[in-house]
Image (cartoon, rainbow over all chains, first blue to last red; front, side, top):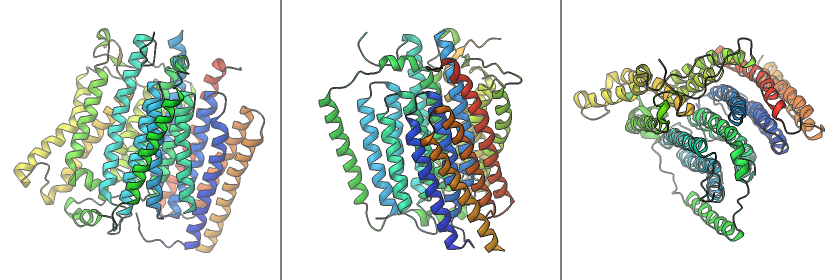
Length: 99
Length: 102
Length: 311
Length: 97
C-alpha cells in the first residue's frame, strides 16, 4: 500500500491537482443537473458523476500510490451499470404495477 | 489541522444532517436513506480514528477499518430488511407511509 | 489539504442535499453520489479495503436496492408528499441535531494524543496468520468471531425477509420473471458485464489475503452480477425452498463454525488456528463464506418470494 | 525515457481535464436537457479515456495497464448502452414528452 515508488514528486503533485480539478468540474455539473426535471436526467447525472469520480479516483490512486484504487474504479464501473439497470427495471415494473 | 481531524469534523456534521432527516421526514424510505447517511458519518468517524492510528508502516489502524467493513455489511442487511418491509406494506395497503390517518 | 477540504465539503453538500431534496428519487440519486464520494474519501484516509466495500456495498448494492424501491413506490410517495411538520418541531429538531453534531465534533477534537493504535500488534502477529493484508488478518483471525457472527446476521436478515412472503407463495420465487429479449440491449449488456464482473469479483476476493480486497467485497460484486443476470432475464431467481440454495446459504457459516470449534481441539480455543496451517484454514473458510455471502446478499436484494414455487 | 513518459502523461491528463471542463461548460450553457446530456456524455467519456491514457504511461506492470483499459472500456460500453435503455424508459412516461 505504501510501497516505494520511483515517481517524481512533482508528478505526484500534478496528478493530485488534476484529480482535484476533475472533481471540481464534476461537482459543478452535478449541482446543475441534480435539479433536472425528470428521473432519467438524475440517474444520468449520477452516471456522469461516476465517470468523473472514476477519473478523479484513478488520478488520486496514482498520485498517492494506492494501486488498489484501480480495483475500486473497476468496482464502481460495474456497480454503476448495475444501479442503472435496477432503475430501468424498477421504472418498467412501476408501470406494470399501475396497470 | 490534520486530515484526520478534518474528516472527523465532516463525520460529525454528517451525523447531524442525517439525524435531522431521520426525525423530520415522514416517508419511511426517506428515513431509511437518512439512517444510511448517519451510518456513513459514523463509519467516517471510525475512519478518522483509524487514520490517526497510522503506525508500523500502515496508513491507518487496521482494527477500526475492519470494524467499518463489518458495519457496512450489517447496515446493508438492516436496509434490505427495512426496504422489504416497506414494499410489503405498500403491496398490502397501497400506501407507503406510517401515518395513523386514513 | 485544499483537496481534502473540498472533498469534505462536497460530501457534506451531497449529504445535506439528500436530506433536503423534495423528491424521494432525487434523494436516492444523491445518496448514490454520496457513496461514490465516500469511496474517494476512504482512499484519502488510507483505507482502500473500506473504499472497496463502500463502492461495492455501501454505494452500489444499497444504491440499486433503494433505486428500485423508490421507483416502485413513486406514486405512493408523491401522494404522501407535504405532510409538513410545524416550524416549532423543525426548530427543535435542528437544535437537537446541532447539539449531537457538536458533541461528536468535541469528541473528535478531544481524541487522546498520541493516538492509541493496534497497528503495530496487527503487523507483528500477521506472520503467524500467513496473510499479507492486516485488515483481512483482523477480519479472519484476530476478530474472526465478529466475522462469523456477521455471516449469521446476514442469514437472519434473509430469514426476516422471506418470512414476509404471503401464504400462497410461501417458499416461492422472489421477484417477477424477467423476460430476456434475445437481441435486446439489456441482454447484450448483461452478457458482457456479468462474465467480466465475475472475474473482477473473484480477483478482488483472491487478492484479499495480500492486498486490499477480501470476501465481502468480492462477494458483493458476485451478488450484483447474479442480480444483473436475473434482471436481464438470463437466469431466473431460484425458489427459496430449493435444497441446494439453502445448503449454499448455510455452507459458509457452517464451515466457519466447524473450523472454529475444531480450534478447541487443535489449538486450545475457539477459532484458534494451529500456526503452520493458519493460511490454509483461513482459505478453507473464506471460499465457502464468499459463496454464501454472495448468495445471501443477492437474495436480500431480490426480496421476499412473489411467485409460487411450482413443480 | 522516464522524462518523455512523464511528459506524455502530463499532456494526456491535461487534455482529459480540459474535456471535463468543456463538458461542464456545455452543461451550464446548453439550452435543453437532451443536448446537455449528449454533450456531457461525449466529453466525459473522452476525458476519462485521456486520463486513462495518461496513467497508462505510469502503469507498473501488465495487470495494472489491463485494469486501466478495462475501466475505460467498461465505462464507455456500460455508459452508452445504459443511456440508451434509460432513454427508452424515459420517453413514454416522461411528463413533457
